[in-house]
Length: 171
Image (cartoon, rainbow, N blue to C red; front, side, top):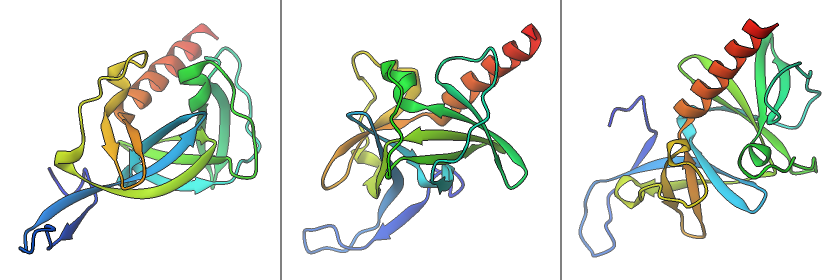
């Protein structure tokens, strides 16, 4: 694991009276519908209150449109719509989590941001979740109070880029 791919914290107490070095990854945990999801904190650019979204023609239904963030055009997808088929309702806790992958930005509309969770790398379990394609997930994380699905942003970004390229070609 490189320092570029995961923010880690070091703990020197292993709970059994001995000092040890434990690497932990940090994840921004958010709720969308009834699901808890997480993204690596290093892949999180910023968290925004909902802003006006400019709709785009001929895009997938989960793509709400684009926003202008300090001169950068960022597509916004509704996580709930993508994985359950229902649109998110905008409330006081709704946020757009702007994620970055390979110098590209993508906004995820979420119901609420819950916490930043620290999880030991060995405590992340395989992403075998029925009904949700495994390629969208890196694993299942567990914090002290909840479990959450860890998104594979590389897949979300590559799928969004491919769909946008197809839409441009159709216009």
